[in-house]
Length: 329
Image 1 (cartoon, rainbow, N blue to C red):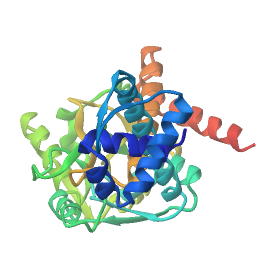
Image 2: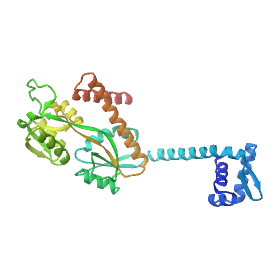
Image 3: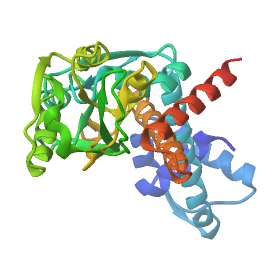
Image 4: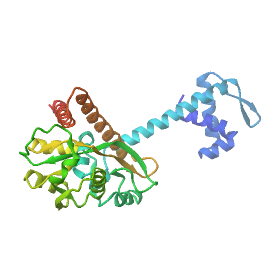
């Protein structure tokens, strides 16, 4: 028994006869009839009642219909999987970000994928706002977009990856003054801040929370991006609100990092056009989701053991890096 024989058999069943089945499959009627007879010889059963030129399923043929369909469906599924596997060996993925979801963060989340698929090129671009990013995804310029939510359109599919936490990062040597975390935002008015002029959505979120706390922020500098913010913080010029991943890096460089009361958070994730993603992009989404879920799981475990958010994130980073180093040895 081979796949072609099952295909001929189902074509006769579904199209009501040899003539129409042969036309549908673009094969000669004689070839189709011969394939059916060969199938019956191999099974040692007749599958049809033959009345003149008509073929009508008999009880044995009826029993074969569903198994034959399953075999062909499974074959098509296997072909799709293998086609996807071939496509995962080459190609590229176009990814867009916006200032609040910096390209550095996306690059960190894509590390596992790039190690698993070194021949797939990641083309990463940053856009001025969530609206600009969504426009690029809608027009097909980007396959995937990393953004905070909500997004200004209902025409894209969304995949929520987590919640971004902003922490207060102050210069190295900032005196603790008996402070216990979290830092009360009501005390912020005496602290000079540096903001990113490109992170408009993030600035709005922070401003809204400060208004609720009746706090007037003291903005001492506006700079183009997060890296410039961090540079000024490390130079001792000002403090800044930075996302957890960057705050852990700042802590390792000597900065003073605090959680805040109330907490500043915003959901984030991926947007893409409706419909199936290509295999490489789909794999990228799955791997990014898995890596972030593992990072968050480790953080939650350490917090349950009594660690602060910052301490838990530092420990989680160390564990993930140690695992990767062990795999590479």
